[in-house]
Length: 252
Ligand SMILES: Nc1ncnc2c1ncn2[C@@H]1O[C@H](COP(=O)(O)OP(=O)(O)OP(=O)(O)O)[C@@H](O)[C@H]1O
Ligand SMILES: [Mg+2]
Image 1 (cartoon, rainbow, N blue to C red):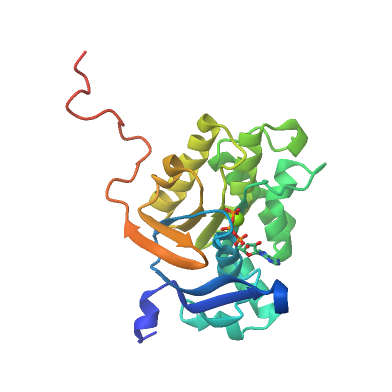
Image 2 (tube, protein in one colour):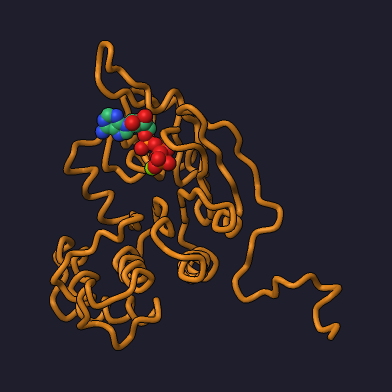
């Protein structure tokens, strides 16, 4: 790609989303421009109803804009057919949702294998890759447990394993810690940060919690279907680094 668009993994240009019509017409997105470079970790914040999930669904090729452009690696997603969008989704994107969205009565191992099944991978490949992904989220040994036999934090880690088992370019996480306590939320943030820092996966995460957004290196704020602010986070939390100020660390 020789154009400027090639610099960006993701570009939204004037994206709108209108739901309903007449009296019930609602503009969920009112012209969103967003550029994301590969390897970024972006937190998306903003009031309830400001369009965060609508934007994530469009970015995740789960929904289409009413108008405007969505470029993914320079390709115009808004012109793709439903099948082409599904292929893009399966090849490049991983999803983590607030409600974990695991299949009940299905083992952690089988939940994580599912995206590979859709890709047509052999049973042997699926098995090995899912076991590796579960290991990488700290759930080695938990392969046979069903969601009901796992804590919320563990279920979300299974969901992260499922999101990364296909080695996606981008992980889209919509309030991934919304159902978890602070300790479990931090564990999830450490995992997401690791995907970004250690594996170069681009992470876009919606959150209502400033403590969780603090892990991202860029903060985008939605208000009324528009981007109200978009700025670098000058001091992102880096897992493993001491959070105690340097001046007082060790001064016991
Ligand atoms: N499928 C739909 N049909 C009609 N209206 C919708 C639909 N999905 C979202 N909306 C409306 O679009 C607006 C934006 O919703 P969206 O879910 O994107 O907000 P959000 O920023 O994710 O909010 P929250 O923080 O509560 O999750 C809301 O007013 C919502 O009611
Ligand atoms: Mg939402």
